[in-house]
Picture 1 (spheres, helix red, strand yellow):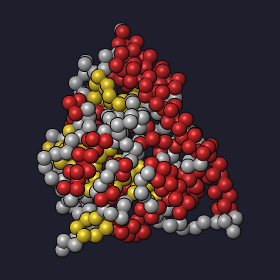
Picture 2: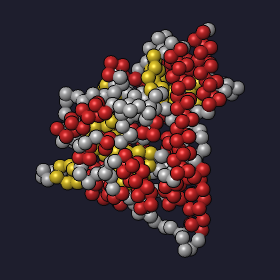
Picture 3: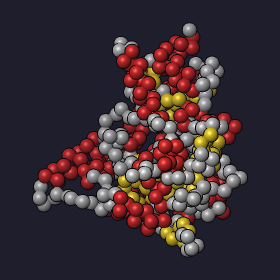
Length: 409
């Protein structure tokens, strides 16, 4: 058989796999080193108790003939979609109905799988630096073109620079599909309402769609930004929103998220007819996906109870205390920093290192801290590293003590 040739265009290893491999090699050579993980965006707090109790009860459901669940609805169980619609949208005055919500096994899957419903001829715009899945999934789908100096010829790059507060601006060029992430991975920057308004106007005028990665919306604290793109007029006609329970409720190992595809959003087929994207995504999911686990969905639904909401808020607050500590310490140590206000990520640049991997090696070898090199997120990430706030208070404090001690030394 012939393979999909687009896979041969990609780097052999995914960014976070490369970081993990370097970390393993270092530990093998330095078995006594106590390395503090601040690289991959995994969480350390346990699942909220409300979700744990709900999943225990769901396991009992599966053990009894009268309450056993086999194949579930591909779009997700109504009890979870109803809870999401009521709490994440209608509570904010946003008109999203349960049948516009699709439960999945996580945001990463949906961000890649959405490419099934738009043409391989589409021009795709992605932030630089940005989450690697945006570029890699579209290269796999034949939309990348050729790679040169770290950029793909058919992708439109949205530079996230200090000059624009690391928030991408609409390009002069046309794009059919735009990936936006706010608060952003990796920079931690959050688009203001005014900036997001520009993007909605751009998408409507270009007959484009925005794929809005809102995985970190629970961390938004600023009043001039949004938790959902649908807070702004016109977004229902041009935006698909992707969310996750991973970074809010510790579901990284459980896998559950959701995507909203409003009835209003349409695409154009080969003969120029307009077709609702919701129907295409529903067809895709019913063909290629059997739905997330009943047990996991029961756990996710429990996050919307009063107890669950309080526990999720406590988790978010815990990590944001870490973020504040990291941001303060890194700035005191002489780093240029952003993020850590509306996001659990801190984006940092050293005056002493211009190469991201060299800075990564310094942190790992000299400070025994594992971070993520910014160049892995795009060419504009060169010279930066990303630190996460997802470790414990104690280890975060120890890591920052090491950074400050090194700066003084």
